[in-house]
Structures are given as C-alpha cells and as structure tokens.
Amino acid sequence: MAAVGGVAGSSRSVACCAVLLAAAVLFSAPATTEAYDSLDPNGNITIKWDIMQWTPDGYVAVVTMFNFQQFRHIQAPGWQLGWSWAKKEVIWSMVGAQTTEQGDCSKFKGNTPHCCKKDPTIVDLLPGTPFNMQIANCCKAGVINTFNQDPANAASSFQISVGLAGTTNKTVKVPKNFTLKAPGPGYTCGRAMIVRPTKFFTQDGRRATQALMTWNVTCTYSQFLAQKTPTCCVSLSSFYNDTIVNCPTCSCGCQNNKTNPGSCVNENSPYLQSAIDGPGKYTGQPLVQCTSHMCPIRIHWHVKLNYKEYWRVKITVTNFNYRMNYTQWNLVAQHPNFDNITKLFSFNYKPLTPYGSKINDTAMFWGVKFYNDLLMQAGPLGNAQSELLLRKDSMTFTFDKGWAFPRRVYFNGDNCVMPPPDAYPWLPNASPLTKQPLTLPVLVFSIVLATLLAIA
Image 1: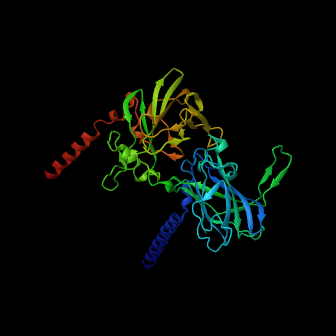
Image 2 (image 1 turned 30 degrees about the vertical axis):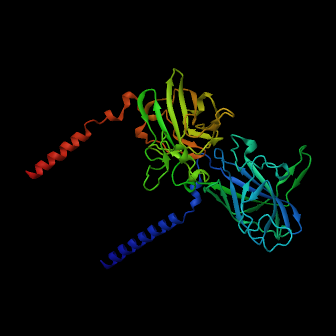
Image 3 (image 1 turned 90 degrees about the horizontal axis):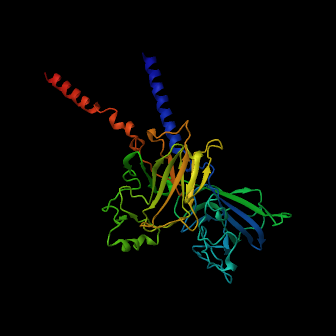
C-alpha cells in the first residue's frame, strides 16, 4: 500500500508540475502573437534607414516607412516615430519631418542641433511645406495609405543629419527601442536589423548606386493594443424577414454618464455643438452619438433582392463619430460568394486572396475619389452606400441558416463586432422559434410533478 501511495503521490506531483509548466508557457508567450491577422498574414510597416553619405561627425540618412498592410492605413493626425540613440547622437537637421521637442542643447556653442534628446519623437510635416524643406514622399501630415487603395501614397520619407554618431560602418550604432504610434498605440516594433544596402537606379535604369549602410525595422499592428474596445459593429437585415438584427448591445462600450460623462451625445441635444468643441476635440477623443452599441462606425448588410440567377446586397457604412471625418476609409468583408461579384455600384473593389489564389472569399471596398471617399462626421451626410450584384452558384447558394450574411467585416483594418449567429434573420419556414415550442413547458411540468411526488 505504501508503494501504491508513493506512486499516486508521484503522479500528483508530476501532474501539478505539468500544470504549472503549461501555465508558465501560456503566460510567457509573447504579446505580439495577437498582431497576427489571418486575412493579412504578412501585413506590417517596414522602416528602412539608408545612410547616404558621411559627415565630419556622423552621417546623412533617408528614413522611409513602407505600408505593407493590405487594408490598414495610418490616418490623420498621422504617425509618430520614436527611438532611443545607442550612444550620444544628436540630430543636426531634418528635411521632410521634425522632432516634437528640441531637448537640452546647452552644451553646444555656435550651431545648435535640431534635437538633443536621447529619445526623439518624429512627426511628418504638413502639406504646403516650402519646397526647400521637402523630400520625396514627405509632408502628408503623417497619413500613409494602403498600397491597394493608393500606391503613390503608401510610403512616407524624411532626411536626417545625425552627429556624434561615428563615420564608418564599424563605428555607427543602430538606434534601439523603436516605437510607432498611429497616432495612438497599436504597433509593436522589433529590433533594427542591418541588411544588404539598398540600391537606387537612375531613371533610365542604366546606373545603380547604393546606400553606405542600411537597417530595417518591422512594426506589426494589434487591435488589442490599439484600444480597449472595438471601433465598429455590424447589423443585418433581409427582404425575406421583417427582423432587423441590430449591433450587439455595448459592442464598443456602454453608456454610463456616472463614470464616463460626456462619452456620447444625443442627436437632438441642444448642447451638441458645445460637446463637439469640448476638451477632447484637439486630442482626437471620439464623441459618438448615443446608441445601444456606442460604436463610431456601423456597417449594415441588407440582403435586398433575389433574382433567378443573381442576388443583390446593399451595404451602408454609417459614421456615428461627431469629431471624425474618415478619409480614404476602407471596408473588408468575407463571404463565400465573393468570387461571383458581377457588378458594384459606387464603391471601388479589389479581391483579396489571403489563403491562395484558389480561394476568393475576401473583398476590399473603398470610396470613389471625390465622390464618397470621405466619410463625413455623424449627421445626415455621415454615411456611404453601395450595392453588390452577385451571380448564384447552384452548388453552394442558399438563403438558409444565415449563409447570405458576411463571415467577418473589417473597417479601416479593425475587426467589427458581429451579431451572434442565432440572431440572424431566418427564412420564414426555418425559424428556430418553431422547432422546440414545448421544451420549456414540458420541463416545468416535469419539475412540478417530481416535487409533488417527493412531498407525497
């Protein structure tokens, strides 16, 4: 018996150790795994730092940020890039960008550096900057669009002259602790990695020059780090059912004037304008219309018509944020019938193939330039609409069990809250309410009968 007890105790110890080990592995997993998105598995922003020439005490470099994300862009008020110098470097001058603070430059006599901070923060210059302060791909107020929407504006660059930095490849040290804000949190940047120097070709392609030294930094986005609550939700309706499935309650937070006063405002409030001009106006804090879902953006998917060989969907994007115009907005949706899109009205469209060219179930939509690419603030004009005409596939098409509604929806790269599947509009002859009408009464009757028998 002692041996058996010893074996049992040993087994319990092993099991306990296994549980502790599993917990340790779970909690030590890197937070950056949250940044993975199956619809854009290779999406990132890559920062490329090219040293173009040496100076008496340092170098001149061109820094470029490339947006390799398929449907997430950096919108106004733009990016903020930061790092920590490895030594005692200073920034003598900049073209196409500037630091937010100069720092303490009191030890310099004569020429004063542009910035002496150990951890500078860089921001883009505004459109209209004088030409002698510009460089290619600069001066767009920090806005970087996606390559799918606007490839000409999918990068941002600036030139920087660094002093006290070393003047050879062996004495220069790469900066550390890169941060990218857009303008808030959300991006996590890795270490700077020295790579093969970038090559530059002349316009005729007959001569190539190269950077003296190049390093890259990769930054990935996580919606969990960007904000505590979602930023958009989805509502559903159809021609075959009178039910309108609204966004889930408290999708993006709940109304609570006691703990969070001023978080929303009613559309007909006499204090609407004063609330819009309140303290959060210049910090970019959202001010949303008071709704049950409290989301700045709502996407409504309506199954509109059914033809013999086609079916029609209407998509409406509504802005409930009184402080935000969404410029260059985009919408991504996933549905198995997107490989049969026949016609699109008033939106641009591009198929995305995150799972390979054989599966085409993901589509990216955005507004037509100068027509509806600007999603206005909350109000009568704060919406954009389009309709899709899709050809039916006889092997897969059905209106049953919510098949006609999207699987996932993104707005500006953020995953929107979907209604629960059991709330979707059902076909009249497939309503879940008619399947088990006697379950609850029979259960109650059984409990009452059992109680009476026990008393007797």
